[in-house]
Image (cartoon, rainbow, N blue to C red; front, top):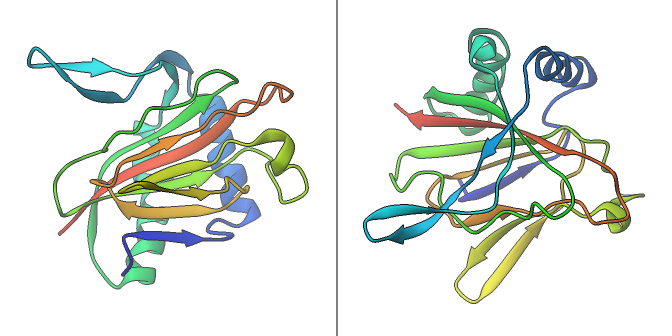
Length: 176
């Protein structure tokens, strides 16, 4: 398995709608940020963005997503956390690790209506840092990215000519 796996059409239309409904039944809070290091022994927070907890959906949506990645990668995982992130213009993320452990992975699923036809006007790529290089993954609707959680990455916000809330579902899993 590669450390960054891009899976186009990871969810089908029915699964996408189930995820969208779960997000709509949740509540957005403007309190999420990724820590970008330590200052004086305390985490230094990055830019704030939106978050919707999906704890109640771990047994339904989470299990479906888990089954998909277990089949794709022929491994067993346990769900650590399931939630949605939202970013509007100006809320570019900062490079961070989700978890430094070697057996933890992140699944991101893009929910927003971003397509090959509108990507250049919306933006919102996920960037991975590789030494001095940056790898961009376009946030096409229904696309999944499965990657090792110790990789430095950030979610970029949509550009200013878009009034979109760029939404991803994030699921953290531990290999068992």
